[in-house]
Length: 490
Ligand code: NDP
Image 1 (cartoon, rainbow, N blue to C red):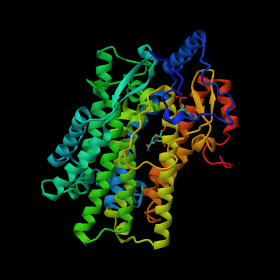
Image 2: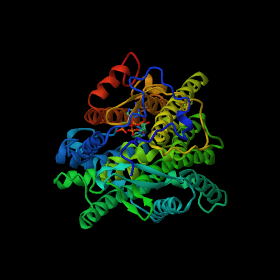
Image 3: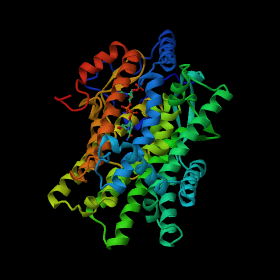
Image 4: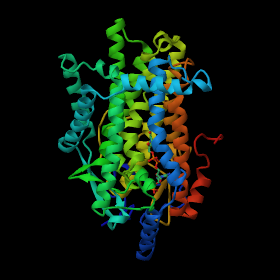
């Protein structure tokens, strides 16, 4: 079994590292494998990092607050968009608070109670995605060696592209035949969101209970609420179906895309045309979901999959939070008077489309450069022609730092410019989603602001983890690639 970041010579049979003669690498001899002693020390470090319990997010109290706050804020923003023209709703006075809460509650009860359409749409959609994930063809890739499983590498069937195309074709047929007009999704936003919130909590509790019952828990803190939030189980699976990947890739982005498609179709049904602003959102969400599917084989080695457990944080955000909060721009454009009247000038549209597409290009190619480099290094690289393959997505002559740990840290391509430039690019896209709604409401800017906080927090956690894992090699890397997000600024 290969240790983390196999010491096999990655140049053998490796199209990505052909002509690999790094010019500026600090240490480049990749034949210089760690000795057995070093290998076992590395494993010990990996086990330590993987097991270490840190109380983040304010510990048990902080996460309990978040578990109440997330669904509350989702309902609040939706009510503001659906019934208050995108303005932040509030009581008229302190004495009006009780009556105001009563009015909000009535709106929720009347417009967000699950109905048969919402339950069947959400449940059948999730079941279809699970069925496709189980049955569609696709390459099988190995994940990173899992320290808690004795460094076993789990296999992942990456059939996202086939599943995505089948989903697109199926939905087009259902819509065109009138069996399931897609515009009904946006009409039932409230009830579907409630179903997703219930699903988020139910799956969290069910998975936690299963973990405890089957004694399949990992990195437990001993604080019930904290463990519920972070999860009990590291790699939940039903047969070959990896639930973490299914929930992260197959559910949120696809729902998000269909919310925008549904909004565009709704506008077409009511006005006879679709504005550029809504086309923008369909493109923005379409690019995101397509990227997740086309690069799915790179996902098993990401932080969420190899490190995070499957608890409320991932489950709730994937099953509910991401699709039903990242869609506020779309909701604003179709649900509010101001949004429906919005029509930007051509120069602004060109600017915003350019911001989206440039952000997408950097994001796609930066992720691809690192993931392909890393997959080549561990011998798991598979060439794929999924659409679109962008220029500079693969580095043919990369420079890197070889760490004592054994892993290589890429220092060329986008990774020579800034350490988290893919986060910056993701944020550029997020900002463009907000900007397309102009300045009539703050709510469409929820996603870019929230995402900035998430990514800054992620960077902090990741840097801490990498500095423990790589020690002085990490310092060397940070000196070589000085900037985190934007060169010469941050
Ligand atoms: P990264 O892709 O930055 O992965 C971090 C890991 O990569 C590190 O822990 C380290 O792992 C390895 N690494 C760091 N530097 C280098 C280097 N120079 N060369 C090689 N490997 C390196 O982070 P994420 O997994 O968080 O994000 C992946 C993508 O997902 C991003 O584009 C992000 O924007 C996106 N994302 C989107 C979210 C959303 O809600 N829209 C949420 C979160 C992420 P190792 O231990 O293996 O060395």
